[in-house]
Image (cartoon, rainbow, N blue to C red; front, side, top):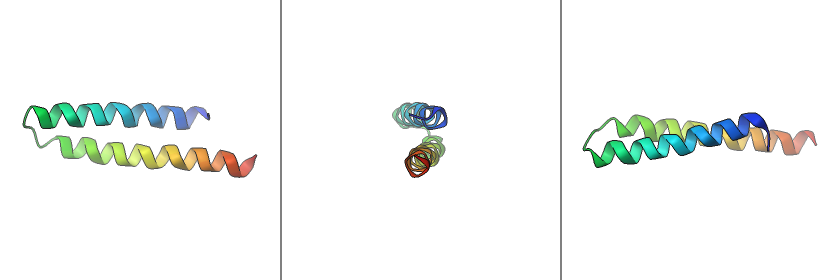
Length: 55
């Protein structure tokens, strides 16, 4: 797994955890964490697909 894809996956998991905790506390800040999780998920898929194409 490419290093950047791994970092993006870690950020995605942490953003999902932060979103769950924010919504559990009743904060609307969780919406930003959901958006961050979506962005990092897309980055992870991009780096994985780019590696498959170059190999």
